[in-house]
Image (cartoon, rainbow, N blue to C red; front, side):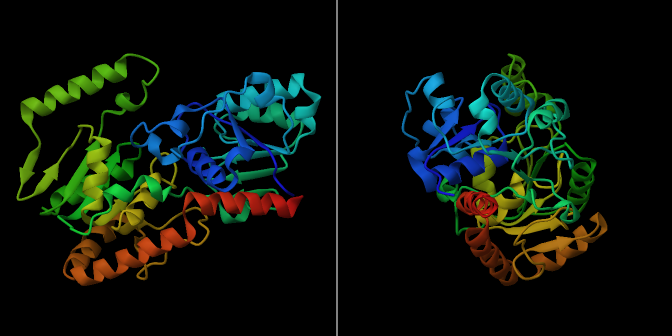
Amino acid sequence: MKFSSILFLNSMELDFLQEIVFSGLYKRLGKRITEYPAKKNYYISMGYPNDISYVQKSHNSANFVSSVFGKHDIIILGSCKAETLKYYYRLLLISSNIRKMPAILIDGGDSIEVGGDAPEYFKKICNIREFDCIFKREMKHENINHKVFSLSLGVNIDAYARYLNSVKDYDICYAARATNNIREEVYGILKNMCLKKSVINLEKNKAVHNTHRTGLRKWFQKRANQIKKIVGIKKYNSYLDFNSLSLPPSQYLDMLGKSRVGISLPGAGFDTFRYWEIPALGALLFSLVPNIYVRDNFIDEENAIFFKSINEIAPKLKKLLQNKERIRDLAERGFEHVRKYHTDIHRADFVLNTIDKLA
């Protein structure tokens, strides 16, 4: 199938898989892909994490009718969030052309079930017409079939160039939100290890991230900044502890780029953006063994270090830190691996090639 025109339906919320797929598709197809609604983070630099899909897209002044009801070869739903499925469902009800158009779903949700983040609208859509192809983030190998494919997160490497740093000031970098009990358990383990020259951050104030539609987000951020000024950041022999405070995104990326080892743990789903950021920034990926299928995944002891239980964390880290040269070698291999298999362009190519084979 030759893709002369693709209609890409967005979620206006941040959806990591959507952002990565779109940036890759735009780099491949340019003006042949039209997104709706327009997302300003494609057009202007808004800072991390929105910059993961910043592709300096030229402004498209097309109105609603020409962009949505124009002639397209295929329609791709970039997200499985309720707003995107709801919008597509309404289009199906009012347009016979939309119903006839091949439809692809990018499901980057946390649920292990296809369409599980918005099951009501997913079911309504499937009652009208089935998706021709679905790409799922949280995917078990046994659930892959001729219509449902695994698609993990990846990285837009252009967003990280300025944070790559050959000078490694920190040994360990662990920065996370408390969205999973294992994250809090590992935070406790790392604290008890009395690490030096490391950055440990567990943000427990979830409200900051769940109030983007209200003024509460600004209030929480302002309050966090006030606390920082009062109590400061705890520092013990270059060990930085940001517990319960929000680590500014640019500072997080800078510190990760200056770290030898980055720790990745599951959040609401296993596949987290940090899993890919760590090697992309030149740090060694230290992660729990994935419980989902990851195509062309990293290999233990070759370009990453994996552990099966939290009891392995302390001994494995202690052993690693005794050989900085080995850490550097593994990290360099991980860096090359992510650039060879896991960029936004690789994700877009997989989507386009898979669709082409099904045509």
